[in-house]
Image (cartoon, rainbow, N blue to C red; front, top):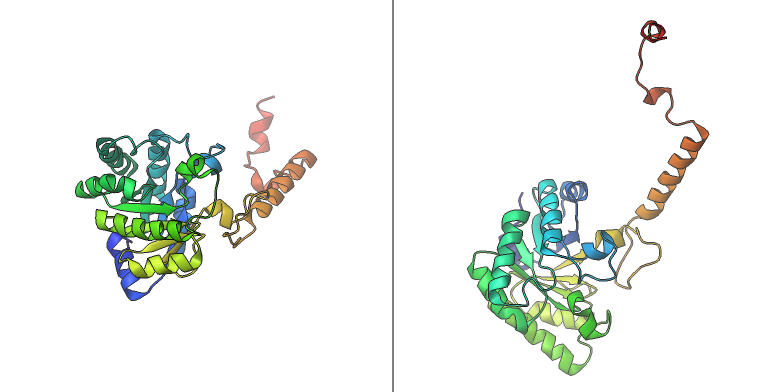
Length: 275
């Protein structure tokens, strides 16, 4: 059954946990969809995990549209959320609505995500009034990494915790259908989840959020030199891939691949006539 923004709302009301992952291409999205994942975020994290940037700031609207469209072709049941890249919505309400419309129209997603709390509520309100569902994102917002001075847990002091609680209420009031809580202390995330009526989707925010999301390369251990504290590695896919690459290289060098069963046949009579 197709997941929608209403599905997410109903899940919170019923106490059913929501599963989300990131994806950036057709084949991965298809596998996630077949597994039954509720939602797929085409995150601007693609700048780091797919394009090799140091952060997400260099990702463009064209990047996001390209990858979102590929995911949309692969996933038919998951709710597809396209990420609004840096400076695609901060500059003005007009730019926010225009770029959200492009991401939905050209990328074929069913919702968009943008980072920020009270400061982007006018954008959230305007985008939702244009009939485009918005997922908000507060806590550690990677597009603000330079302002934060790095990737750090947010909301640890009383003042910061109170601000996050108020921002969660503000984005709900502005019309967001859900909110991502990233790198937020678990007890604060639980309080926020109980204080608002829209689903909270946690990443590094404890078990009491209404749902969870992870970057799929992280949860499949595709990076041997990077493992955030909040990530559980559910499969060692990175190691399996390296073993497969090594075995292929070895058999190619030895001449044992391709073997007879991998080859197409032609009669000796035809070959003899070619000499």
